[in-house]
Length: 139
Image 1: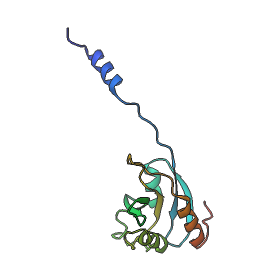
Image 2: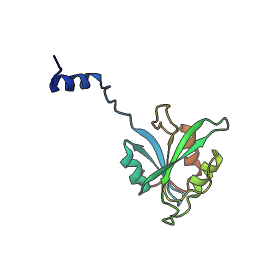
Image 3: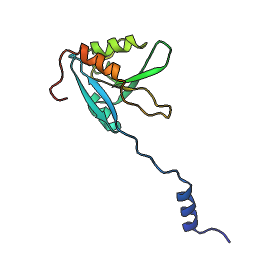
């Protein structure tokens, strides 16, 4: 006897792994004027809203080559002639990457091994707070 459509649907549902919801990620938005704001990012749209465009990842590494953070910037920032982001550029250069980032930059922690972002390490958040021009009023 061949399985019915309902049997097939039931087998598919039983074989699927449950979708686990990812926990929100704590990060910082660095603005070109040197201000910053701490934010929680729950989904892709949160990153895109902070950047105001399509995002591209700039991975930041420690001196052993381990990823410690990720900066997300506007994928077309240079084409849009967005202003230089000196603080984000300096952090990118400090952690082994391109020193020329433009527009808003979202900094979050490195990859968790499964392809998901983690919270920004506290030492980077503290560094940003200490070198920021001023705390953003909206934080």
